[in-house]
Amino acid sequence: MSHLSEYDPEIAGAIENEINRQRNGLEMIASENFVSRAVLEAMGTPLTNKYSEGYPGKRYYGGNQWIDVVENFARERLKQLFGAQHANVQSHSGSTANMEAYFTLANLGDTIMAMNLAHGGHLTHGSSVNFSGKFYRFIPYGVRQDTHRIDMDAVRALAKAEKPKVILAGYTAYPREIDFKAFKEIADEVGAAFMVDMAHIAGLIAAKVHPSPIPYADIVTTTTHKTLRGPRGAAILCKAQWAEKLDKAVMPGMQGGPLEHVIAAKAVAFKEALEPSFVDYAKNIVFNAKALATSLIDEGITLVSGGTDNHLILLDLTNTGVTGKQAEVALDSVGIYTNKNMIPYDPRKPFDPSGLRIGTPALTTRGFDKDDMREIGVLIAQVVKNYGNETVYEGVRRKVKELTEAHPLYPGLTVL
Ligand code: DSN
Image 1 (spheres, rainbow, N blue to C red):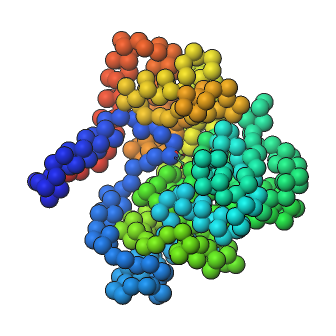
Image 2 (cartoon, protein in one colour):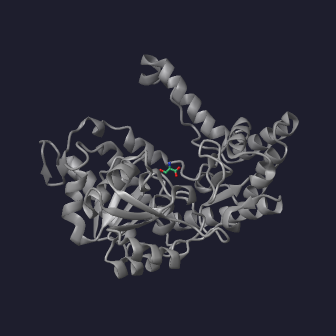
Image 3 (cartoon, rainbow, N blue to C red):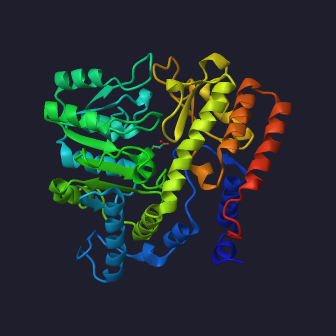
């Protein structure tokens, strides 16, 4: 029996139940993944006990000699992974990383151009209920209604009219490749800084499966837990000219003590992402997404932009008679985990939109291949097209069980 289960069986039990939910379901939320046992072990260490405000070699507390070793490995590995000039690995989350990048590149009240939230932008890219929309004047750009792709001519025209301090690229629900070079050219034309939030596609970029923003962007933020397959957290990369200002924006500007147990886990994940096998993993994420997209299209499901170039697919459920929320709940009930999502030009509201977002990073980690993906596409379509039909749902549950048993997750990992 573990210390945790002996002392706190309620929490141990809930953790065990969650591990089993992850094992027994199809995790298709595009922003989720499964970390390795090595990453899990690094996170669960006494490094959580240590205060280490500051940076390696310049801390506000004593006793940081081993913490410095860990954080230096994390910084150097991250720089190597992306070919970046400077790395800061202390950001607690993607939201704080974006705040720290804005603090570095802009003054409060400045204009920032970013993707419309309903077209695939993020909460911290200018939502009026988020700090970003309160602290800065965000001007949204979007995708074309006919192609669902970013219209770079429209972005250029908007940038010339608005003269933003920062232009931001990088999205949470955009299934197509991003032309970072074209964004940089527009930023240069209007004298703006260029920032990229690569959180969703960081793992694909690390493996060179998607073009890199590093040569073009002043600052690149990322979470570490999506396609990069590290612990929940974030990191920031930048050109050398921004390094000092960025580090100050992170600490003391935004954060206090870093989470060094998580930074240790980030270092382990970056080492994993530097392995040749990570390139195969990232390629398989995209192969799998394309196979899944083809399967859904064959089943008559409409996809935003007609398919995918990356790890995610956005289903447009408008013609199915089922809303995004209904689909999410129905799929939950059969053990297929997804999230409702706005689609571009969505007539519905965010709490019950017309779209459903799915992705392949987590199942690819479990070893699912394109044949499995084709089968999952059929299962998703069955649930949507037979909404409320328990007999169909029972059949899907049986298939989910077969698929998950064929690709075990964390064999031997127990809490109780
Ligand atoms: N919540 C994340 C996502 O699911 O895309 C972004 O932070």
